[in-house]
Image 1 (tube, rainbow, N blue to C red):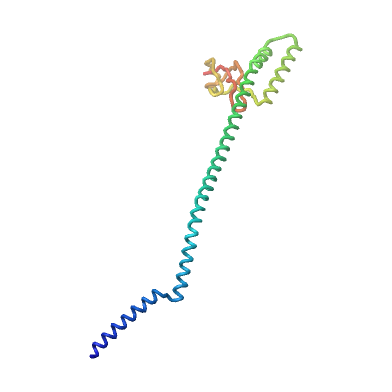
Image 2: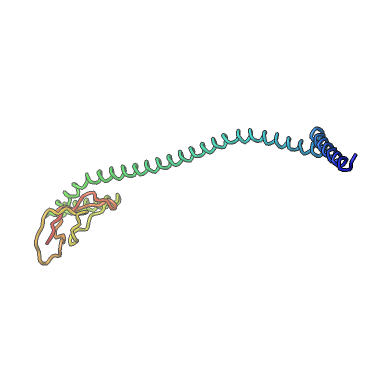
Length: 199
């Protein structure tokens, strides 16, 4: 047998031996490879177990977040309702108070007229003055104040002009006479002052 033929047969034999060795390793893996495979399998099992737990926890987390959002919205709605109710309650109280006090103003007008009348009876005059003083004190305690109009500039937000007069001695839109006293409840007008305006 020639050397070339023998070398070719040896090379072929080595290839066959290498292929058999690879096949044996596949069928009978080394102990290290078995350990690695076992670890991989265990890790995959843990991952598979963790996935359902994570999937179960996610809906619960979403449910808690939704309930928390609902709770916060409910708290905000209640707070808005409480503030709105308080504002309405205050507005109703102020409205009722203003209307009630306004109904007493004709009594004030009559007391002013009574004081304007000349009388010889000093006791009668003193009695009316005392009633007027008591009336004014009571109104002040309730937060009602008289408008200071005479000599002031006309303001349609506070005054009702019923007469106009030309007077060179008076300023532009100056109030020269008050026919009916105006009243304020805090900053709110409960009765406009009825006035005469110059120029």
